[in-house]
Image (cartoon, rainbow, N blue to C red; front, top):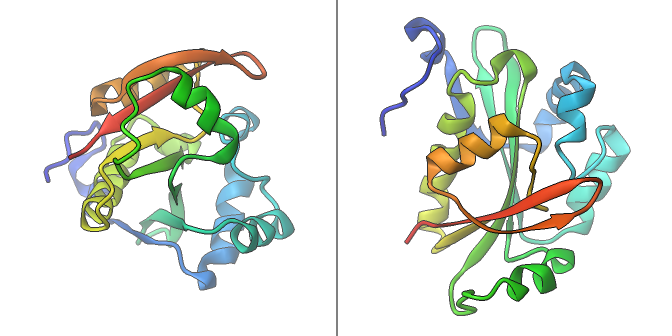
Length: 184
């Protein structure tokens, strides 16, 4: 799948996307350290310290994490989590919107991109990498993990361009939007 992005042509050739490995923990923690406070506040699945990350992956079942790595700089520049199914604490709200086919295979999706790599096609590239894995795993619908903050125009536009549909809104530390993408 071709990437249409605003990064210079040479910079994208040094980006690889793959699943997170247990040996990536220190690099992931370094990635978290580089994120701005604003970017950290938009990512909610877990806190950004070693114990929280280890506890998160030991607690939740059905998780797969993905990273985008700049191979020249040898650093993670994007990170995303995919969880099979709907999150328990989101399920009642999501089902209240109606139109859910409980026979579909859903997953919840939570991405983040390093501040200096945002709006350069990295999120899209990582998303399409993940999308290929999801299709192979018989997942046919993606729900945003905890929605997206309504004031995060960049993220809302990103999801709209990918084809996500708005399901509804809810209040949690401000207005949030639940979005869904059917992929099969």
